[in-house]
Structure formats: structure tokens, C-alpha cells
Length: 121
Image (cartoon, rainbow, N blue to C red):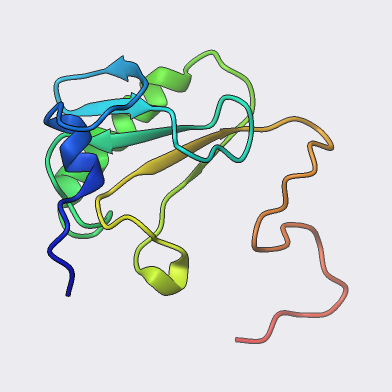
């Protein structure tokens, strides 16, 4: 187990640099270090919460901030993960806000179209 400080807690505390795009009493919207598209943002709660199930109230408040921020904007993906197998790399809740456009070439890890054969369960 690592004893490294949480990078998002360091940002919230002002001990690490970040480009802050929006602030709320309960959350921050920041630019990620490696955006997948232009305009990609992260919304992080000020309170340390490992993932979206650890504290549903903090998760809901963070989601509300993200939804309010995106009101009136175009198409977006909102993505979060729980656990390393689900691609979580920073263990502090964070919501990826990823702007999308027709034929932008950004692939998601699942297929959202219709399939000619039924899904196995």
C-alpha cells in the first residue's frame, strides 16, 4: 500500500498546481494532465472519497456540480470508475467531462450500437 499523498487532495488544499475552471463549495472542475479531447475536464469533490460508492451524498453533490456546469453545453460523456480493473487510476472520486462531436474518433470501451446477435449474460 502506498503512502503517497492523494494528488486531488493536494490540489484541493492548494499544495499542488492545477488549472481550475470552476469552483463550488463542495467541488472543483480542473483540467486533467492528459486530456483525451480538447475541453476534457475533471470534477473532483473537495472531500476525499475513494470512488462513487464510498459516500453517495458526496458523489451526488459532485454530479450536481457537473450537471450544473454543463447546462446549455453540447454533447458530453460523463465517466467515472470504481477500481483499477474499471480503469480507475487515482483513488479520489473524479468525474470526467468529455466533450463529443460527430465522428470525433474517440472510442469508448463498449459498443453502443445494435447487435444482430443477443448478448450473453
